[in-house]
Image (tube, rainbow, N blue to C red; front, side, top):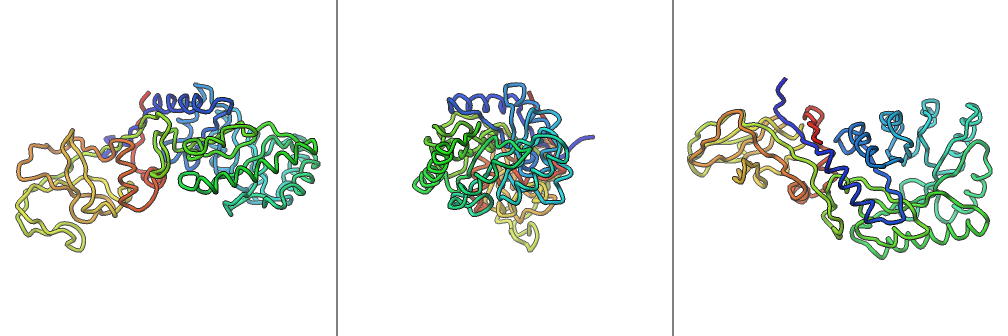
Length: 364
């Protein structure tokens, strides 16, 4: 069956990006983050591909995501909290994160009832305000958690809130973690993994790659995309291309209305092309009148409002494109960043918004 919209994903380049990140973080284990189905790119495909080049522990947001890849990777870390009713579904190879003593007790009781030892990481809130032990309570809570039976506290971590633009606050978060880790070590408590760096941290905060930290979490960097703010120090490749086809073209007269609400009125006679991709597929309506689709090196402006299923483009007074012709929607990283700026959002949002009916095409 022919797909009208395809997202081309280069697995080889994802592997090469991973190896570049490994090289840039000496002394640190790199944990690929495959939340939201690997940002919509396909968690199983990406996990298998990265496993072939040495990735061993992967991070996800919730239990359903973990179960998608737990059978094909060595270990999965749940970065978020689990609901109490999810606990019975926990599977071997999945390590929860602990955000409270009460949560730790639940995991301990679960592991004891299953006669197993459960590896866990403790999450510390150093300023994100989302999840984790509050930093001023963390020491006393951890000294209690560590004594619970049937759990092995393998790691301790925190999360940057603004590593892409606020270096001072990021260093403050690091200093809080260092003080806590030092105090715990003085009490004889040590961890196999200490981590705080996310993709923005890897790019911008070199201090997060040094002791006591020995692990980093890489998400969007794997796909050759950076936040539009901050440094872009890594030499990463774009791995994504979004393509559709020309489904219709018509020669319309000056004054013809285009799109919902007559949002564009033609200022001249021109060929108007219709491309079967819309906001349901990941083209933000904010791009209306402000962005371009492409054929080879030729840019065609979006005209009228982007609708759910279709987008119209101005093909000019002379058009030799034929129906069914491939149209480039996103050509790579720079287009993703440009879309994010137009939408007033971040590149993560652009990638994660590519719809389910878009066919994923894997290249290696």
